Length: 205
Ligand SMILES: NC(=O)c1ccc[n+]([C@@H]2O[C@H](COP(=O)([O-])OP(=O)(O)OC[C@H]3O[C@@H](n4cnc5c(N)ncnc54)[C@H](OP(=O)(O)O)[C@@H]3O)[C@@H](O)[C@H]2O)c1
Image 1 (cartoon, rainbow, N blue to C red):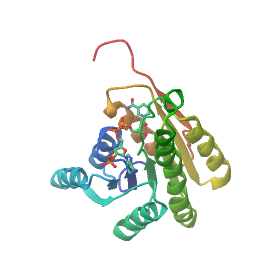
Image 2: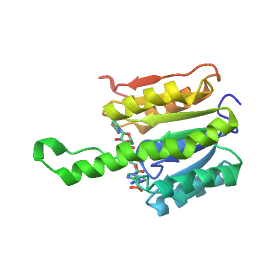
Image 3: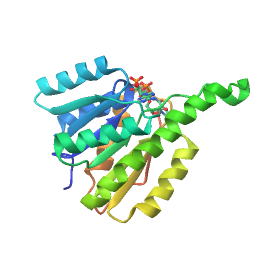
Image 4: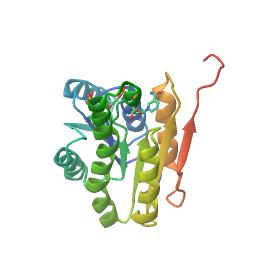
């Protein structure tokens, strides 16, 4: 299956920002989206908006720091839509200079969400994608650890599974990042876009 139309896309952190904009854009382009985050009221509102616009969406409460929660999220994609073509691992928190301030707890929380959450996504999604013979992981992150994990995943996952890292510069336009994610998905199956770096320009809108 190529392009975006009909693909099943599971999006973590879909309750705001980049994840929300990505869900909206991909649903407009015909993807069947599964929305995950902790604030389910926001997911409910977004899923209703997509359904009212004629799209296909479901949502489920998700805490990426809990492996069982991520597994159940990916299971829901398969139960509801029959497969999972793309996992957009977007859930994340911005670290607040944890090292400088010696805030070990803050560093722990950041690692839990931004790194362990990514590993949970791979653990839940990779067996499904291998069984299907295709799939794509997309990371929305600027963190070094996530680059290292995704490179290893690319080498070990097998030739049919695509891995893309989107590196957003500090941007106020989640829509710009959403378009980059759509670009990576819509490439033909034999094109694996490994990295997209999005930088804001100095020019006004
Ligand atoms: N915007 C930028 O300029 C920029 C730059 C570099 C990197 N990034 C990265 O891009 C990603 C999205 O950024 P954003 O600007 O869209 O941020 P955002 O608006 O704060 O969105 C973060 C999303 O992650 C979810 N999330 C946080 N902890 C979670 C958890 N434990 N389980 C499940 N979901 C969780 C939040 O949902 P709930 O709170 O409802 O769970 C929210 O939907 C993040 O990884 C961020 O670090 C962004």
